[in-house]
Length: 134
Image (cartoon, rainbow, N blue to C red; front, top):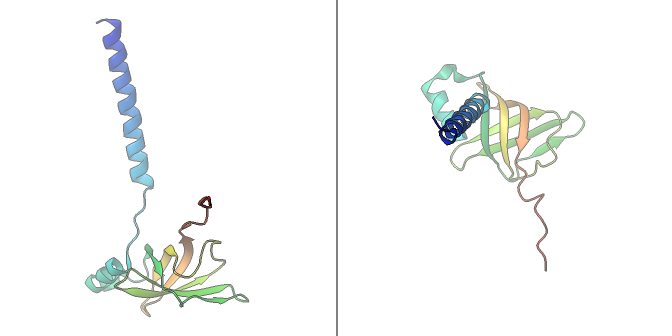
């Protein structure tokens, strides 16, 4: 074998190994979230789906955000345009949380139909984009 062939085989082996490690790492750490419609389908198909830890991604319904500063309680509704759920979160909301922002809510759906959230992640939107030049 000449030096060029050995180099090419070595490069293919290294690139393949790095590609495999990247793909397996992404697969292990990637997490899927449900939409409210998918959650409703799962609950109707399997009533034991209540009180299981899950993530739900949706948009906050405008006008539904209620903040109680004294108890650090946040109540709001999320929707995907078809199905909506009320959410109760105790804690400080993210700085980027506003009315009608896209959120991922981590928590448990209870039989009363409320998602009791343990964590709320808000999409940043255009907050950090550059100001258009005049």
